[in-house]
Length: 401
Ligand SMILES: Cc1cc2nc3c(=O)[nH]c(=O)nc-3n(C[C@H](O)[C@H](O)[C@H](O)COP(=O)(O)OP(=O)(O)OC[C@H]3O[C@@H](n4cnc5c(N)ncnc54)[C@H](O)[C@@H]3O)c2cc1C
Image (cartoon, rainbow, N blue to C red):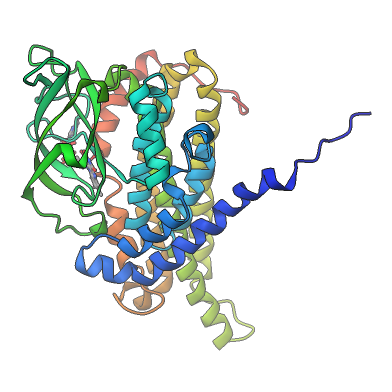
């Protein structure tokens, strides 16, 4: 007879506290969410609690000062924060996506290992600069290039970076460019550039419908830094093997959080109606039922994405398979569409109370934030990339994989 080995309490404790730390940050994020949105300002109060809770180093390996948390745990934090303030959650998600590139592809480099230690010690915040003026949202294409500085051990880089979320607040930016001035547009590398190594000249303000607190302004980016800060792996491989999946899963976690808070607000309206009219089923209960079903479906999609990623991480062939690429891209298109649909349904359930910009049942901010999902790497661009894979993609008939 096999005896189940009981895990030690101290082994469980830090993990079980992740949720509590996330909820502490969410409480503060919720308190300031409307102000962050109204003033299109960075959610600094929530980020302070995130840093106090050491959540910025959650994914970094234990030996480098982090906690080695799984993608599922991090996606769960995204969803907890997303229920409170979409911008806070998206800032957290984007930082974790950048961290994942270091964790997955930077462990063989002394510089990047040292930098991961710094992230853990100082709770550094990482931003991303893939979007470039002139190539639109095609992150697999660059105009700018890493060029030799005065000596070949250093590079200089200038990029028209049209969108860098929280660029002014970040401690470092992970930026893509062509390998050198002669390289074709798709031969890209990615470097970590620290705040003291770059200058950001503002070019485009961030006055948007939603996600206003991500402060995703445009900048003319100029930097000088040692070449050792460039990740060895071609950016195409980083994108395919970790970044794309992490982005689509963690964004989906944020969007699930937004949708689930909108449904909670709609549900509160139906409950209030039921209390007012005991014995009668509220008129909006039918639509609430359908909306809860759609939220359930969205959750299943995110969980399936997580499951697939965990399996693929342990299997190089699966990770670079067409089926995996199709699944991860479809996850993004599906959940980004679902979040806007679900919030719109929640608004119909809540009626005028949901349509208002004020009041406990308002889902106005949720609606505006949810609309960013489809353009955060445009769904049409993703679909056109996926449709090219259709003739060579395999049929997946098995329920369990
Ligand atoms: C909240 C938020 C935060 C962001 N933060 C960052 C950040 O920190 N760093 C960063 O680098 N970027 C960031 N971005 C930018 C994002 O990643 C995309 O690059 C950007 O949103 C794409 O903008 P676009 O739709 O105008 O561009 P494009 O993708 O170029 O699309 C332009 C138009 O062309 C159409 N289109 C494009 N390709 C096709 C195609 N193949 N078939 C049919 N139609 C097509 C689209 O439908 C759209 O109408 C952020 C975006 C958002 C919304």
